[in-house]
Length: 205
Image (tube, rainbow, N blue to C red; front, side, top):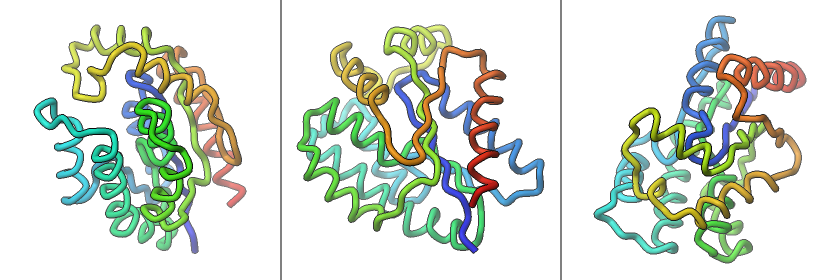
């Protein structure tokens, strides 16, 4: 029995982590087995990579940043995501491969074809059943983070042009299983819209 793989994507401040927690709690309330993960992170090796990538003191170049992200993803897929899906669980991921295309390709300017090939190695060809992209302008995202008093990590502290490229890549994202949601909606309405998309696709698997 194969489970269902949901990925939440979007620029900084879009509300992915909050939405992931809400959907996880709601799905568990139905009696479903849910495994919630974040990227980069979720295993000892992946958390170590996360610490390096997001720390201001580690000025990793674009290539090193990409490889650290992919190393974290490979470990998470092998040790957590694939086993959970094979057990029939609902896996909810805060970021996955679309983040690489948005940040390292659109944001950093790395070659899309080479990044795609490297990502296929990291994922083993695993693709989400549903990707919900939370659309939000960089200005609105930064304003939210400022109101929350959030300290910016290395990625969040990048310049306006970088985040504009990332946001544009998210807006342009399309393909099987990709759905866009308006992240400017109040949190409860956004959660309802996300749950409706999940419930519809999940029942079809």
